[in-house]
Amino acid sequence: MNRKEQINLTEQFVRTKMANFDGGHDWWHVMRVRNMALKINSIEQMADSYLLEIAALLHDTADSKFMHGYAEKSYQEIKDFMSKSGMEGYIDQVIKVIRNVSYSTKDVSGNSKDPVLMILQDADRLDAMGAIGVARAFNYGGFRNRPIYDPDGQYPGKGGSTISHFYDKLLKLKDMMNTPAGRAIAEERHIFLEHYLKQFYKEWNFAIQ
Ligand code: ADP
Ligand code: NI
Image 1: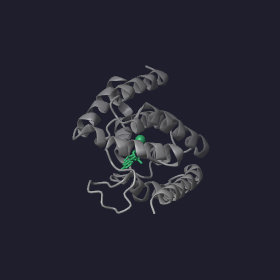
Image 2: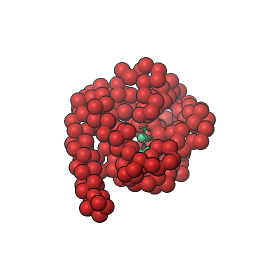
Image 3: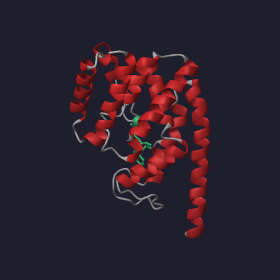
Image 4: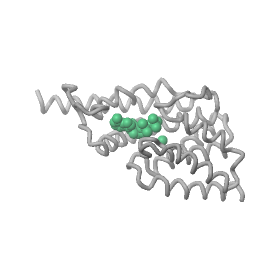
């Protein structure tokens, strides 16, 4: 099987695996992250683009938020899939990268210098910023039935409101970029997040005084 066929097969595998994820983690998120990762790599020339593409396609298929304790089973399915598709030589590196790409599990195995991981992390984080980042945050908040904003900070559920997620995570991403190309895109998207919050509070305070 040639590399093009392996990439096509990986796309099909990912589409099936992610069919029930929320709208912020759907196939289009994977497409955006894959294309952004390849774009960053075309500027930085750091990583093997075939390995980067495979890792980008697979990066959310074992997300524990949707696996309800079955993430390890999903990792095994990814390994089985790669091995039967002629990609056995890349299993270890791809699994290591996708275990570490998430914001919450960063740098667990100390491989943050892997250029595939550095670029993929930037691409994934960029998709949580800017206008698409705002859309994904509110979509995820709705999926978890969280309030959009809780001015008194009284919301009892864990995680709080979606606006609080901006402070917990989204506004921190700009300073976590690994590559100069990623950082440049993050600057613009960060400014948009700040504008968005400013307008949000303006409208909120106009209505509720
Ligand atoms: P990562 O896998 O990089 O840790 P997540 O899967 O946690 O990222 O987040 C994916 C998307 O869901 C992002 O756009 C993120 O902002 C959004 N998201 C995650 N947790 C929350 C939350 N508590 N409230 C709103 N959005 C969230
Ligand atoms: Ni992702």
